[in-house]
Amino acid sequence: MIHELLRKTIRGMVGGSGPPVAFLTPQGDRGLFGPESIAWKVHADFISMMIGGVSSLILQALHPQALAGVWDHSTFREDLQGRLGRTAFFIAATTYGPMEMANRSIERVNQIHTKITGFDEFGKPYSAKDPHLLAWVHLTETRSFMRSFEEYRKERISPQEKDQYFFEMKFLGERMGAVDLPGTYAGTEKAIEDYIPELYFGERARSIVQLLENFPGNLIARPMIKLMSRAGFLNLPDWVYPLIGKPAPSDLERFAIRKSIELIAIPVREALKDGVAAHSRRRIYG
Image 1 (tube, one colour):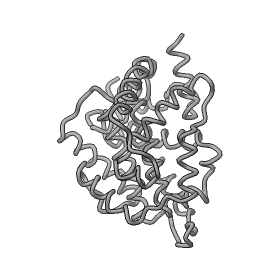
Image 2 (tube, helix red, strand yellow; image 1 turned 60 degrees about the horizontal axis):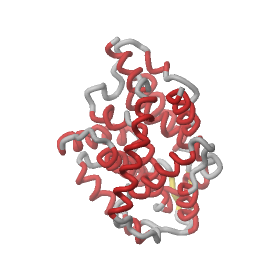
Image 3 (cartoon, rainbow, N blue to C red; image 1 turned 135 degrees about the horizontal axis):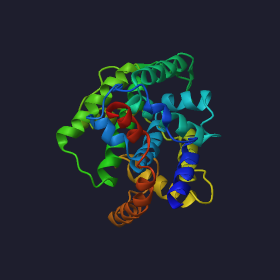
Image 4 (tube, helix red, strand yellow; image 1 turned 90 degrees about the horizontal axis):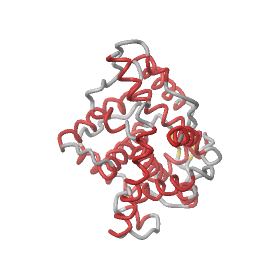
């Protein structure tokens, strides 16, 4: 009973409609990465992926040109759940989906990007096909997902496995149009910091942060959403807090949030244990 309620609540959060049966076929299709990849391990955890998703959206909003594409060409501000649902499906399709599903998802997003052009809040032209902007989105997402996995999963992975994750994601990012992406954890952190002079926290970015602080959700989901949203803010690099006018989280707050996440993660992970990753394993192994 409780697990079915949790499943319905989580599907509502990301726009899902039912069990991921599309991932069961064709039999034996390993997709882009396969079950031995670190991407399969990291992307399987709903809790840490949601937390990482929040922090990556905050980081992406700090780049005026990356934000302008979303601001001008999406319903993100009015339909945050829809945006998250589309992003969640893209990650699922490219990580776990059969080859045709993965390739189709990549091609669809690349095609959409050809139509996203305009001017940012400073009047500077932008294009969603710009490799520099595509790299920013890629870097902030992969860093956020890995950092969240490290913090909120008790399952530990070695430094070599962490680097392997960024090497795997480099392949996907370059399929999306980014170039010269780092293939290590340290390289990703350094590449993100190289963007700091380009970042700006103005009214547009502030409105995105406020939206994420007041993430929409029904009465049942709201406490869990609020907690994961706060964890997303704690998942940011330390240099971000002065930029967005927020105090750096204390060690006590980090501890309290981590323990709270550990508590809610138990029933959530149990409810989702037969999710996309499990279905995809059945596709491969039968």
